[in-house]
Image 1 (cartoon, rainbow, N blue to C red):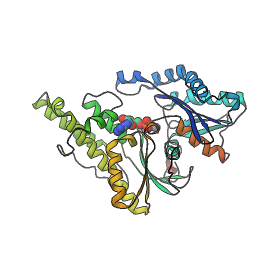
Image 2: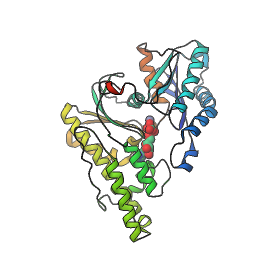
Image 3: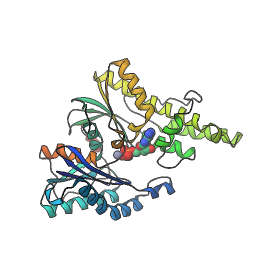
Image 4: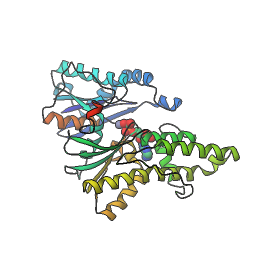
Length: 339
Ligand code: KG4
Ligand code: ZN
């Protein structure tokens, strides 16, 4: 019986995992950031502090598990907002120490990959993974639960940021990805064309596309103040189309280069319905086997932390109580070898 805790950004989350299966999963999303159009780190830390005990208690009660029966505490160690991470990490440390059970520090991005193992069928190693979250956009070759090589990554914005900025320009609330997805379902993808990013190798770039969209909106709004209101669905559909096609182009290239046919997508943007639909098409065309997490496990949650913690626990990979969280991905220089 393992407790997972996530507090790297704006979700205060706790999950009880029993024999590798989710028993209770609690996610408290901080709504206040909507007022600011993005996550305010200081507010996030304070709210984590306020909610973490309740989140953990709710998870334990919902799972009908007493804390004295826990065998380990898994927690996001990084990357993320330092203040926010410190709340979850310190809580987990104190709990592990008081119960005299192992602390398992988990890499947030590896935890996103672990969501693929929360439901059947699972991919088998090695497989390709497109990790698309609010903070990261990476192509990973996944060799094991711990060994993941970054074979491509964004040079600037993440695709989640691009979705959020697009939404903001259209006057939609934060986080904008779900709103773009919803509006795009009724829009025309072909209505507007935006420049395709051109980046060497398997890397991505979304800042050019974002700027092109900004100028396009500005220019058209200058001529017609009702432009966004009149075309919001088509704008959402066209921009979503451009972002998704850009993701898929490099994913196809990566699949060709690595000769891998098990293809997975994880992270908040993996919830996108058009991305899922396009991958189902590619699955047929290319004879791929495509894997997605359940929708509830795409955006940040503690089930993914508990699951990754479970894999590490089974291999005896524990974290000393003297360890601290890390805000950025460790060892930038060696990052192309390991996550
Ligand atoms: O993985 P996540 O919860 O947080 C990080 O680890 O960063 O991802 C959040 C991101 C946000 O940018 C949000 O707009 C995006 O995921 N997102 C979506 C959808 N649902 C969430 N983007 C596109 N379509 C969606 N349905
Ligand atoms: Zn995340």
